[in-house]
Image (cartoon, rainbow, N blue to C red; front, side, top):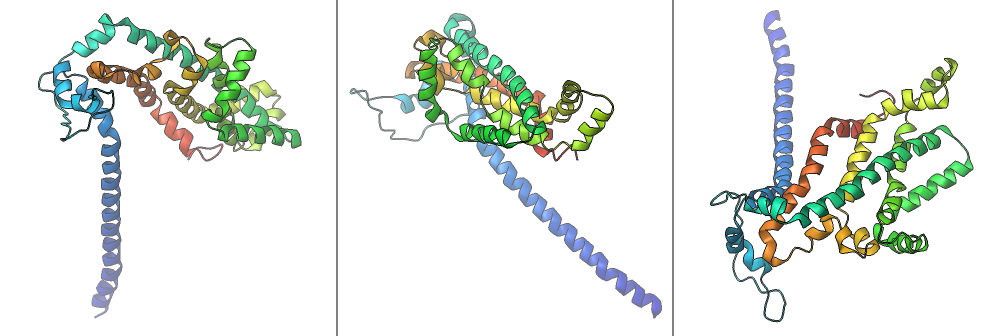
Length: 313
């Protein structure tokens, strides 16, 4: 009788454990399906763009020509039937890429315009943000609080609000229609300073105090302690800044008067209905740098988002 009671007592907790495991499995399965559904929805336009870039111009026109058709007065025509969205071309064609890369150098010119505008902004904004955020994290006082509060106010302002002041300042410095009109506001943008300051403030002061006891100066503490710990946050900022300015449209339209200086992001929005196929190919090429940077720095991006202090969990 004693053995039977013990077996019955053991069956109760085992049944509870199996029930919890089944419940956990159901929850995880639901979360996976939910996340996968959203991933498919968000990736679908990208997949359509890449797939249609390998179609011939005639196939693209037959599938999507009605979307870009206009009436005699120039207004958009009414679409009376469903648009045929295809993910698999009837015949794979590289003619669009051949045109973009070899026949029409204007697309590559606009691509390099984007590179020339965005890379200096990303590099120098991160350098300035690292130095400024270290200063904000290491100093105390009312003046620091006032200046940092000013950074927050500037960061909360959208581009549309600051475009007019940027235009007036660029005009006063006589740098309109030059790359400096884009570089200077981008390099001194407060976004990276704010984000990195929050990360550096989480570094335990004991690390800096121990380094000072060992005779380390501010520059050594900056390079040997702050930078290695905030490496993930720095990569995260660099990725976000690059993607933000890689897709900019308003700044070049306002600050550039010469259309030859426009980046490809502006040029893509102006492709007319006679170049629908080229739009898919150019958009695919335009996505490559962002995708490569994300894939290369994915671990650092996750690390920067999940960082919880001086010691990574």
